[in-house]
Image 1 (tube, rainbow, N blue to C red):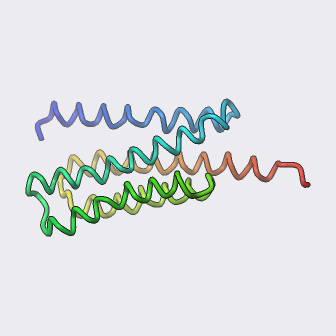
Image 2: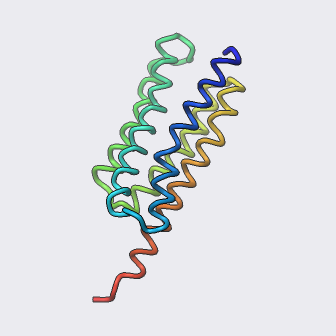
Length: 149
């Protein structure tokens, strides 16, 4: 990848963190938490799906060994994201999504040995996981401060 394209990819990737970080910060200070958490979870699932789609593209470009296996595995982020958002309580969904990002990072970097991609993915994934941790803290704090019934 040429330098100009790498810079563009970095800028777009970091801009994609705005919904993660913005909603986490607003939720942490108690602004619109009930509205923003479901939006955050859906955005997280969509972006996780996108990460699986990268491997679909690599298969199409004939850049991955065992393309049949890669196509099956690249569906996992979409399925995990959907299950987390559609079927799990919010607190569990946050944990599952954060874990999925970290686990997929490991798989991703084992299949895409491009130095620029690793430089891009690692810090961004850690920010994404951190935003899930912030939301987890917001939710668990809210649950602990509910009046006993």
